[in-house]
Length: 245
Image (cartoon, rainbow, N blue to C red):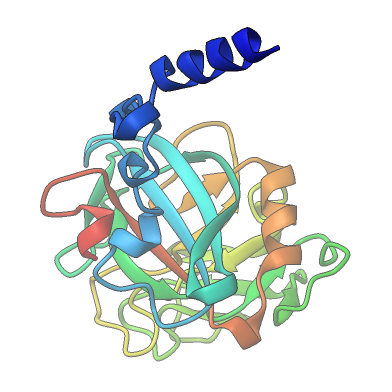
């Protein structure tokens, strides 16, 4: 019996970590400190709310990327709720502050989301302000109109039909959509109008951000006006990086 106890004690002294020996190091790739912080925590601004949508492309010439939606949880930490493949303008992305109208580019920057709309009824669970498209719903993009970059019911006399979108004609893309507040609060003529987050069409957009229909429905049932959601559009790096918007 004494022999077995002595042998066990000796074995314990020789085991790794005995007598203060250094523990086996954790590979850097497995260390918690090596995990990157969530994207919103690396951004210069997030809009100050508790919900954020990021739309990120590899570079300004890209027409595809990823949309991710985030929310603040315990202790104010950001967590991803969902993501989806995204499409951008036919000519890629351009800095929102210098973008020009009719360039088929998606403006980068951080924007509010004034309201949602759709040709179809709002998805179940939608809490966001939602406007249903009618046969008289237009989005005016006429630089000479007092209704520039605004939804109108019935086309105003000073807004030419050739410089406006009749929303009901885009039954697929505008089945469900969120207005992106680019050039919206105080519109600058010639900067661009009618920038939305909407459902995929056949290919790249004329300046909007698009996602699959199922993702758009999930987004509308998730966004909550009380949590002040924003959208940040940008690239992975460079002067239009989403982290610097």
